[in-house]
Image 1 (tube, rainbow, N blue to C red):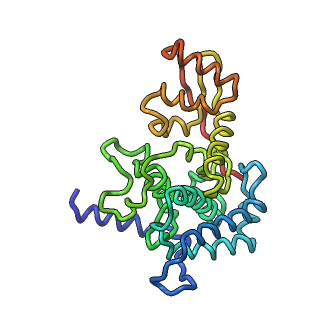
Image 2: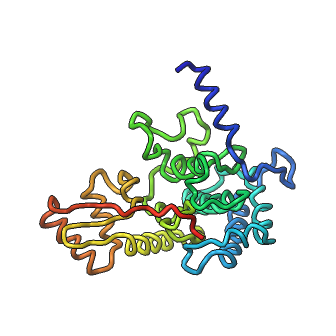
Image 3: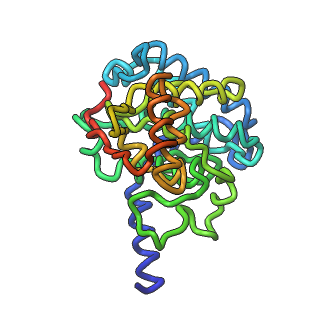
Length: 290
């Protein structure tokens, strides 16, 4: 493929993107909003939405009521401030909490922005590739946030093994990537499906404890040990390389978050007869998390 052809493909992809906060902000162009101030404001607006339109267990969203609400309009107005945000001013922990929250809020924003709610997020063509926010003058899609930033610029699991990174080396967003992946993010990111983890709002002060709780809650519900068979969520299958270099390391990682009985059973299998373990994955329910 020629360089010209590649440029055309990139341009066509960007033209198809939906930048949901592409509006002028109240401050003049070129000014930078205080990063911590914007992040805190975003958390506040998300907490309002969570309290009013998301179920107590964090698994269901009332998109129809949310869409026409004043609280959602306030959130959308706040999202405009992201355009002039200076991400380089955020610490690593601030950046991790920020992008988890923005990923989840962009998912909700992207679904609420649809003329008609789909029965599944899979019904929206290239939802994770084309649903974006402008943050600090750069477009970030859901895939950019997850793979480019939170997974330390690792490629999407479905792409060719020849692709080593999500962002190219000359992409300025590469400098914003976290230095390594924290596998617990997979139990905090919500893609709009019923099989996704619960929606929470993360802060710098609660991040470590909240990620531990998210991992424990999800794994205790989604991983089952029966005899020599371990049934896991598709999330653990898709992102296996984030949990270890092989199946043994993945199961060892998972065992830390299982209830005591299942934890003891799995640890015995891993110690005494690891080759006898059969790992299977549950079918993923892509139905919208209504």
